[in-house]
Image (cartoon, rainbow, N blue to C red; front, side):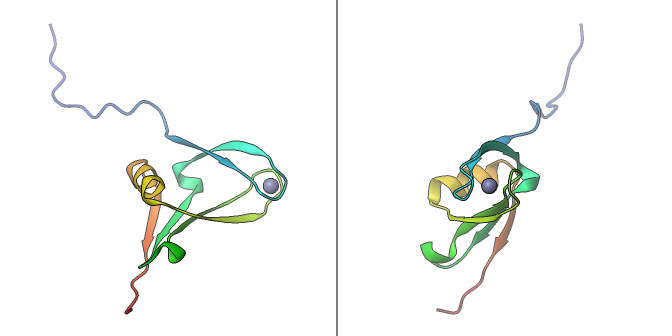
Length: 84
Ligand SMILES: [Zn+2]
């Protein structure tokens, strides 16, 4: 008989599926391999990562849903403050 008081249940690292537009490789990235930048508009909201296959720096626009997923998964988020 044991009680586990509200221990956070982390089920392994969160992985995000991504694909490289350059070499077309598909892979899974951990939260630490991704960066998210949230700007004032859709154009300035994007996520980026480095392709593990060819080393290309990939930057893709991030919609609301992706932003939610990434932030929820612990991806480092950079908020760009614009004075627009
Ligand atoms: Zn690539």
